[in-house]
Length: 206
Image 1: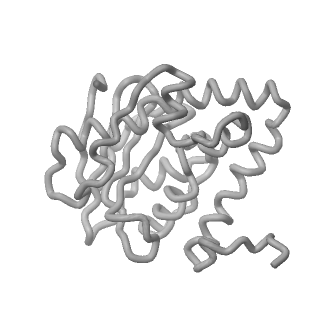
Image 2 (image 1 turned 90 degrees about the vertical axis):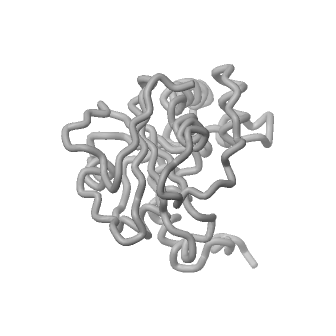
């Protein structure tokens, strides 16, 4: 169980310091970028503390959150950044940079497996079992249950540790430049997804 969970309405408080890297995740009403809205944003500095931001359907101003997400001095760590970057661009109107995606990193170095979900990677690399019981849940509810809060927090509390382990493996295999190129491409990948090319491989021959 996380040390601390703080729930905020509409934005993070001013003055919060996440250091040079913040773990980020989102909860939405579904996985359709055009249809489903952004409901919750989770943030952690990797210190056992999680900040949950509940977004109202009629208010996505969130100036402090937007400033953090676009701060070039703070790396945003995601697992499956492709979706989170796109959904936050869709609802917050921002381009998130710089980004580190632990799912991409996993696929680049854990080539001995096809299991790259957060639960599997976390269990193998840092020995923690995550519960996914609240994965299908009403994240637009006015009040988040304790179970929802714990679930949401668990998705970000270990991302700093995961990044450290995966980065060691990336450097060991000589794939640092390739990984960075993939992370940098996420901005374009999000734009393609939002523009309707979500399923199409535009690089394919056919």
